[in-house]
Image (cartoon, rainbow, N blue to C red; front, side, top):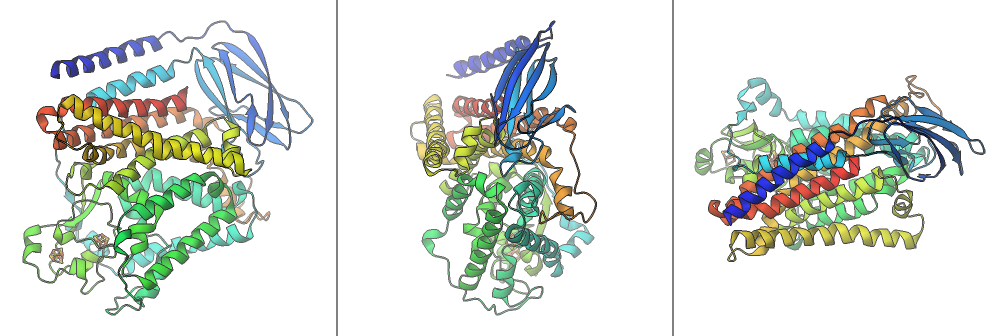
Length: 603
Ligand code: SF4
Ligand code: SF4
């Protein structure tokens, strides 16, 4: 079997080289003059994909079927306005093979930010190049399990320790976010219904979401939870204090029902959120009501139940951040567990001069993973032995922790990969009919879309993952290991690729729509104000030339992390002697998934 695995690996490598060589020679030739009649209407171009040959000059004759639209080619300064009843002519030189995206550049309705079309210049071999790169990265990453690396204790530095021990720190982080949150809700309730010109949708789904996925999660894990305004009012009310420490909280402090003590409530909430994602992210009123709903629910749970159960079990964003925080290069842990064993107070868990851990974590009891630590720093303030440390560490360190892997977390990891795939198709793809199905325009098409969405995200993808677990067991000849355990443990290897895919998706949504941020700063309600003189900010589309490459780089980084994690996990579950055989189907699945994303970006 080992020989077979080595042969498969070498075959993959050779295939990669052949594909790479096949990509060479996609040069330009003397081209034709091509004329394309293009119709635009809410929210698609028809035809949505146009194919030409490298070297052609493409003249688009564009007509609008409804309102005024724009036509802008990403990565170029080519842009035109398409008025109803008049034909606009735009010439695009298709010099090089590859894919160019064009998009509407005049706000035309709620789904305007996702109104895109594609110009495919043949012979487009970039998906093959992408596939070859995936194979190479997968093969190289599979060599040898990841080893532990030293941590850097940030709390050894006095200023950091001093800052983290301040009771006012969290309040200072939350306060500006609470002000922005209030403006978001007001703008959503009172402002224009057009998402692209309302502070509510632009700040939540472009500015905040971009910052969260591209910066905060990959670098800080659950850092956002330390400054999130949603649980703050409930927490302050339940504690009876905003900054200070009050020993007897005002809330009822009932225990959260045992049956709900898992991430399944967050899984359900996240599933609903992504299913209705297109409606939620493009309608200011829906965004505002959703945030208000979360706040009321958080307030109610704070007043009735003990600690921060909303963040621990219910919040869909908390679930998402929680599983991806396993990858973050930041951790909060007890410095020396020998000290904890001698400690009677266990103040990090029970509280003392500070509040008990709001998410029931116990650093002194060997808390080994980031998933539920909201970085509130209460344990750091409570510990009488100064034995809690905030440390820098290698990316993905928690994936190697074998103890405590759970089915609810595994399903969340799968849900997030499936959702990244589905949303990349819906929001970044050129197919207008899928967008209108997902936009709840009519009940029948929406139900069809919901069936397809759920079929892929909670049906086909987990079934494939299960098949991979079964194949891995068969390749390794380890029939005694339950497939259920492999299903759960292997799902953790999907996390780096899932995060890479979410980052790539987010970059492609945020970058072309960044110009709306300065616009809504000047005119948050869409009432025609120009507070800072930035209401007319425009975007030339030129910097977007590098976007697919940045997406590919994020995907490759995710794939690298996933295959490395898979190598470690397979070794833990099946034993080092069988790890190479057991890894083949898992790594193959990861490469195939990554390639699927690459085809969406380049194909
Ligand atoms: S209070 Fe400090 S010393 Fe005691 S168990 Fe917690 S981290 Fe360890
Ligand atoms: S008390 Fe400590 S372990 Fe608990 S959430 Fe806050 S920072 Fe994390």
